[in-house]
Length: 173
Image: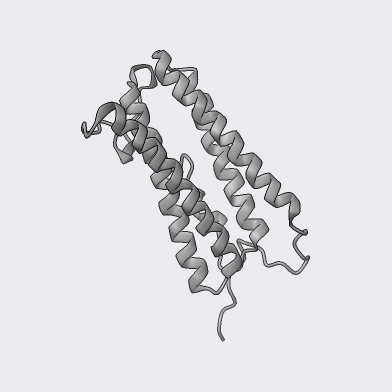
């Protein structure tokens, strides 16, 4: 069972560490999806998830740089076990035969989850600096959702023959 996060006692250093861990978790999940989609010869969806790896990595690195500037190499007190799938897409949403549109929809849901996490946490924060950071992160997630929606709007609708992302592969007889 994950350790609980006491948002009312979260320091600004802890808030940075939590945000960095959230970005790392999402990046790693997208890397797993890239590997799986490459393995199953679904290059378009894999390429989109590669972009998400890059985006999550850049955001995590920017947060880490800000953290280092303020706190140097001070050890973390927030650990990965304190979170699960905050921004990382759910495993069950991805399949070997997904389209780019389906990949974008998975990313949109992940960005929405992250926004909702920060929005919910804000109500429990007592430190004004932590609250400001979480509001900033919440706004970032809205921007990310907007970018995904813009790409989605430019894509044609999936064909009626598009495989279901949850469909089981054929079984040999």
